[in-house]
Length: 316
Image (cartoon, rainbow, N blue to C red):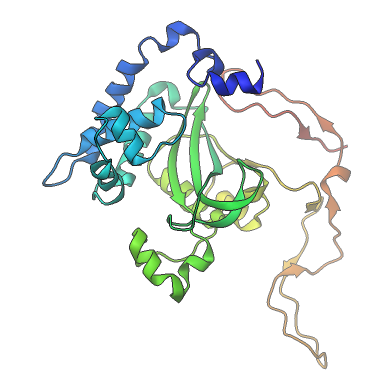
């Protein structure tokens, strides 16, 4: 099937690897999901949960121009301007974290998912026409493979065999969003006054902590080299007693014997800035990953539910 054919058949089940029989009950199952979660959208005085159903249907039945107005016109009434739907998504005080917590709870209470699950830390970007959305800026968009005006979210997903879903998420706000000049804009889009700048790596660690504390069972944390190259993140995960399997750049330096690390002592009579950052103090030399050894292919344990990796390093 060509790319053009795939674009033309966005609602063809076979495009997504599903037989026709698998989709016959999807509408009923989708409504059952909404029914289970609708309490998360109720407030003390109102029940706007019907708009959650409208928005969900719009996202899943429209492949382009999914604005609030267009969704409302398609799902509710051709004359609906989408204002109520926009108010529900933008201003209604329901808690997104409560929805995420219920997802985690349902996963944790499913016996078949008790072992073999993995967490996957990654980001996802949406292209934006302008800089008026929260966090919008010219930044790298992985979907486009280039820097564009985009909104970027950092997400934590859970995977176990054929079961996969995201279980936490944070909107990344670039550092310039926290300048005094952006104070009015932060207030306009609803950024909490207490929020401070955090890197994608720091947001990722916060989510890993929340999921771990929430009781969701998983075997290992996976991420690409944007996160894997961070020694700070790897140390945090290790200190928490968690296993991780991460990508690192091919030119990453490693040590075959543990080096002595510390802040160098100030030498008498030496001019210049006082050292403050730790570094290797002994004669241990780092070497590139490709020189450590050869590579061999491994397969995951049968029934473990762990993601398959194509190759693993082996000391040569």
